[in-house]
Image 1 (cartoon, helix red, strand yellow):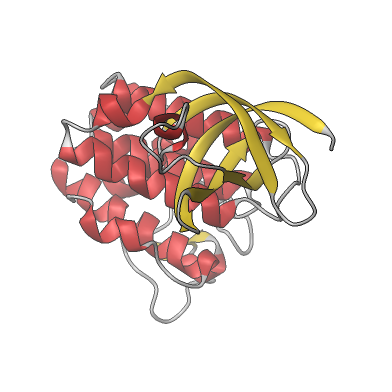
Image 2 (cartoon, one colour):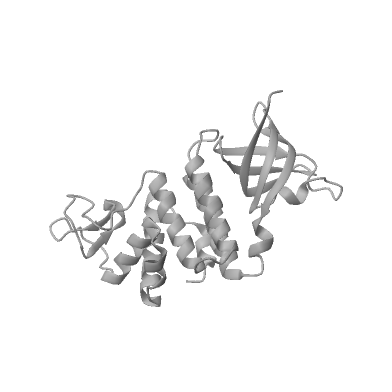
Length: 242
């Protein structure tokens, strides 16, 4: 049975049998991996608490015919403990885990950029570097961009005409000029568009200078854009305080 080692963030778990769990991981070198953690639901388990959602771990796995098996786990950072006393940060983090699970491609395919983005976003949340909502929206936009769904905020998403533009359409890929505007497009405020561009580019001084109204409107547009490309929304976003 071949062994391999990798770093990972635990995305979710589900019960298996009487004492085991299936653990979904986003790894640095092997992309999304679903593996069995044997006996972790027993009180005598050596690493049960290390394979819970939000855990950042270094682990060894044995290749299996259907599911790999976790054989060793070492904690790199326990984000659950650092986020658990802040409801806003915790719910934002939960949305990050769910979106990472949905946006990463087939199991076993490398997804190093998505992994590094998720680790960096969770660390920023845990360290309280920026407002939680801004970190979440920035993460979602960047994660979509890595997955091939980068929105356009500075130029028209259809013809490439330089902005600023007033119409936003998720299905078209972002902002649209007057000639390309589609029925049903939103008309966000200019400050909101600037905020979205800053979040996508990581321009934090500009993002943090935004007002509450622009942040609320930006969050709604990010959620709509994400839902369009995932074909359904994130359940965890319903619990995020907007």
